[in-house]
Image (cartoon, rainbow, N blue to C red; front, top):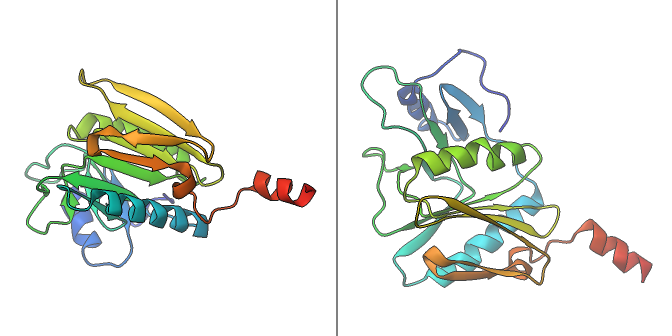
Amino acid sequence: MTAPRTKRSYYSVEEYLAIERTTDERHVYLDGEIYAMAGESPEHGTISVNLVADLAAKLKRSDCQVWTKDCKVRSGPTPGEGRTTQGFYSYPDLVIVCGTPEWHDERQDVLLNPKVIIEVLSDSTESFDANEKLRRYQLWNPTLTDYLLVAQTAPVVYHYTRQTDGGWSYYTYQGLHERFEIKAIGCTLSLQDVYDRISFADEDETASEQ
C-alpha cells in the first residue's frame, strides 16, 4: 500500500465502497483510511499469472474457483447503521472460494467467504501482509483455511494453515525443488512452476562464473 488519501481524515465503509465502485483505481480500506494500491513489478505479475494458471487447471471441475486482482475481501465486522469506520477491505493477489460465494451486498464485489488467500510479496507490502493483514484474516474470516505469502526475490513460500482447533500452523518452503500441498483444496504446487520464467540474482551469478 501507499500513503493514505489526505483529503479527509476518515471515510465510512459506505463512502469507501461508493468511491471504489466509481473509479478504475484500487484502494485498500483500513479502519476509516483509504490507501492506494501500489504498482507491481514484472516479476510480481509473472508469479501471479503462474499461480492462477496452475491453480485454475487443478481446480477445474471442482467446486472451488480462483479469482485474482479485482475481487475485494471483507475482513471485519458487518457494518451497522450509521457511519461505520471499523473494518478492512482488501484486494488479494489470488483468492480461492469453494461452494457458493457469499457477498457483502447485492453488488457482489466484496467476498465474505474466502477459502485460500495468496499474496505475492513486495518491499512496500511485505510487513503489512505478514503482520496486520494476517491478523485481520485470521480474526475475521472463519472460512479461511490457508494464507500463503510468495516471495518474488527468492524461491520462498510462507504458508499459514488453520488447524481443527482453530489455531494456525506455519511452514516455509524454500528452493525450486520444493513441493507443497494446500490440503483444503486438494492441490499440490511446485516452486519450479510458481517461479517459471523468473530468474534470481544468485542464479545469474552462478551462470556467469561457469
